Length: 113
Length: 111
Image 1 (cartoon, helix red, strand yellow):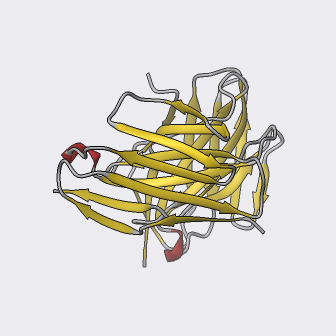
Image 2 (cartoon, chains in turn purple, red):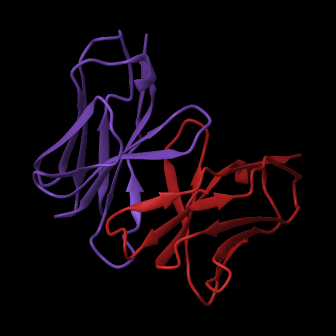
């Protein structure tokens, strides 16, 4: 069966510090991968998605970036965090089929102070 | 106008009640539809896919109306454990690889 891991679970970072969140998927190959952010009490905002190694599409302009160095590894980064980067970051994967049902990791709760 | 819109909520219902959520979508090219459940401070989890013929899973029934571009979720005999936020999700053939999520409707089931 497939599993998706994210770490860390929670993170408190000062403004201006760098960020690296990691997501890995097991039990599947060549998945679509996604990064979302959810602000408190709000809906999901798609940040990045990837259909393959090195292929990243950005949905919104921001000071975040994403990379996919391996088939089942997706990394979200920032060189300098802003207060507005606080939120719940969720990684998801889907099979490349007509449904493209997404399955989410447990998320990383980031607080920028 | 948002691509996917849901009932604003919150819904507060007693145990045993029947509650229905609606969701409308604007992209007529949408081809797959889902309901997710999100518990407080947790990740969204797939509740059920929604098929054109309608589908049922225990106390949950999902319906799709392509002509009117809306989907619905009916929960019968509500349990305390049904308290959560329910997210409507739509995939489009023209938006390959990406899902559009509604903002969610919060349900609280009270004793």
